[in-house]
Every structure is written in structure tokens, then in C-alpha cells.
Length: 230
Image 1 (spheres, rainbow, N blue to C red):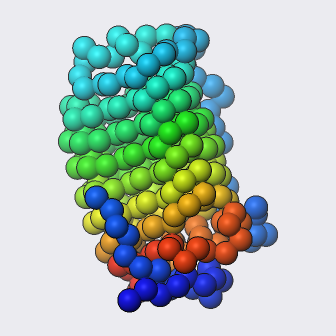
Image 2 (image 1 turned 135 degrees about the vertical axis):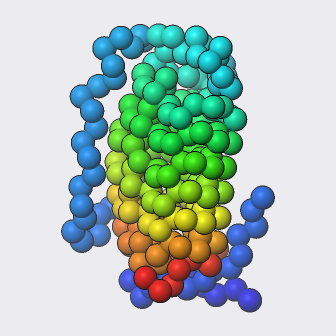
């Protein structure tokens, strides 16, 4: 059975299962101001092609790099932070942070302003908070946050206003709020925040109420299986 999401102001209805593998004038807390700039030892190189970081030996690929034209993947590393990405301001393709069992914070990406492709944060087992991303303005494809069992909140990304395709936040068992996304004004296709058992629906609604493009939630938008009690 499929219920249609009518209006954020009346509260979200369930819009259906997710098949997965602007300002509204209301008061809103301002997010942290971006830093004055990248570290002083950053270079200005624009790197063609893709970069895959899986260990210490790969970090030399980033020496002097400000932007990456292709994809950036940080997969299955033993790093506890992403400080080695502190100079990166733009990724032309998809940025994936996947399966990093020791990763505890994402502040190394505070200078990132945009991704031309998606931003995927998935299956990072010890990541406790999605903070940082203080300069991020735009995600060129989908923002996907999935299967991070220890994440309790999304407080970063306060400057993010536009997601070109979809917002998908799914199966984060400890997630309680996504307040960092309250500056979001545009979602190009799908809004699917589902199956996060601790996530307060009031936090989800607060994000949705700020979206002005589209003017009304689409029929396939879903907030299924979150915490309706808060």
C-alpha cells in the first residue's frame, strides 16, 4: 500500500517503500562559518582521473592537490580521520567513504565545496557523528548515508543547499537527528529517509519544510520506518 506525501506543513505521510540495494521564512540556527581557507601548505593542482585511497601508500597521490576531476574513494582503510583530505575543495565525480572500520570523524573534508557526482557515506562502523563539511554547498548527484551503525547525528553540512538527484538516508541504527541538513532548499528527484529506527520524525520534517524546489513533496518521497515518537 502506498500513501502519498501531501505537505510538510501537515506532517509527512509514508510515501512507499524505497527499493534500494528558498527559505520558508522560519527561524533556523545558523551553521558554523567555514574556515578562512585550506591549510597554508596546500597546492593548486587539479588531478585528472580517479583517486582510490586504501592505505598510507596512497596518500602521496594527494600531494599538492586542490581538486580531483574524477572520483575519490576512501575505502576500507584503517584511518581514524580524514585529515589527509584537508586541501580538497572539489571532486568532479563521486566521493565515496565506505567500509572504514576505524574512522571516527569527517572533519578533514571541511574545505570541500562541491561534488560533481554523488556523496556516499556507508558502512563506517565506528563513525559516531557526521559533522564537518563546513564549506559544502552542492552535491551534483545523490547524497547517500547508509548503514553506519554508530552514527547518532548529522550536524554537519550546514551550508548545503542543493542536491541534484536524491537524498537517501537509510539503515543507520543509532541516528537520532539530521539537523545539519536544515539549510537544504533543493532536492532534484527522490527524498527517502527511511528505516532509521531512532531518527526523530520531527528532525526529518524540519529538513523537509525548508525545501522549496520542488514546491510540494513528490508522490515517491518517503519517511518510512523512523521514530514517530519524537
